[in-house]
Image (cartoon, rainbow, N blue to C red):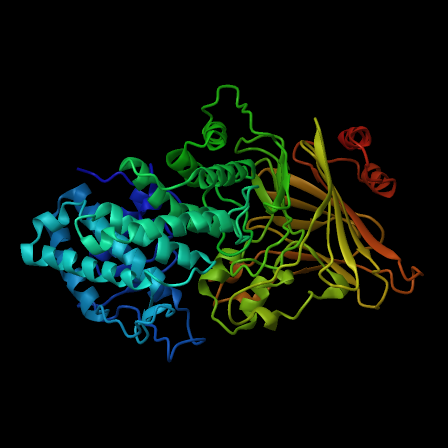
Length: 626
């Protein structure tokens, strides 16, 4: 009997970094494991583990910090390797897979024995020499619990099957130490002190110590939901991957779905409302492509499994409607979810012409009250843009850097700071140096409130700002025509203080080609889709690639996409203490018709931004004539 993986992939540890069918990946990784080759979830790393599994990954908390990435060991010890072989065995019935499981299981616990080196309730790790944090130990416990629902423990020798139960009990009983631990407001605590104890209490109530954890774990889960998810649907970690993938996918959906299937009350009414609201927000900002834009840590989060999770976990109707359009199962392709979304409490503003995979779309990062989010970035007013379903502007390196970067490096600071995003660097530099974010976790991201958001049939107007620099304000104004493109102005208020030019930065996505036409314009192309970009005034272009990312973070030089810096300045040209400096530009769809450049430039020269919906309609009409 096969194991159903793809209808609910997030209940499997192997779904980390999911890029397609989970079953196909697990079968591939399982066959590789039969040759003692480990494939990391997501498929971006393969390691030979040795003929006798003598080359398993290692990381010492004492010796390896800053020297190499800890994530290889951290993910490996969560136990997804057991899922690989379980699924392969159920699909093939090959007895060799069963024998390989027995060898691997013994080697795993021989290499990483269940030794508790620190038993303080405030300690974040069980083991230091072979670093195993409590979060990873919780994932391993759930992976082993899942083994009991496969053929494997019933078809191996009974003594070895008992070892699974014994190790599961040992891991689970460690969570009793947190009976009186203080509340902590980050997602590790939600998983370690709430969901893992709750799942153990639901699935193994026969063990009295596990059952005793239930009531406290329920209260912790509900408290986290009310503190981590606001009433607008926003999550305190301003990162789409950690919001939809980690918090909702890998963590909460397991507890919510198990509670439903065991007819247990987990969420109270307020928690239930917030989880529904947050899935509605994820549906509202769903892009046309396969993955959400990279906002915050992680990146490359598949859209459809998140929508499926919203349907599976809480029967969210917005997720159902958007998924139906994406799967072309909605008849005429219509749904009741609005095309426009803007909420700076949730953290996003976006618009589109449809929810179909071939749509035009933009997403801007706007968020108030971020606090000290560990997975947040300094990405105020950063923009992502798609035409005809093709991603043109985004953050192509966020995923790769996050999963390969070492603590204490310049690259880590670059990842979290403003220079890796599509925003403006006032006077050519970020608010603080990259080194500020090179070590430790936590980014106190300044607010970026939305000042105006107007909607009309053919598009929207968005105006937002941030004051992170303290001595100047970046105000971004954007008109989005659903079928034409965008008109944009970046204004630096009090932007004439110093001679250094301001930089409007754009990161082009992979496979986007760029050809400069003249001093003011370029043509971008990806596949059959073309976009003309035109700037006002006398912009200074700099086309470059961040070669420092190769080869540690980006494996090939060909994988380095183009970056465009557009410099503009008002120093020595504009007088006054309150003077503003601005740069206007447009991106217009040129796939079927290349617009007249002179007419475009004339529109930019006459560009004014609306204060009313009526004025917005007039400007959209002018834009449509291009």
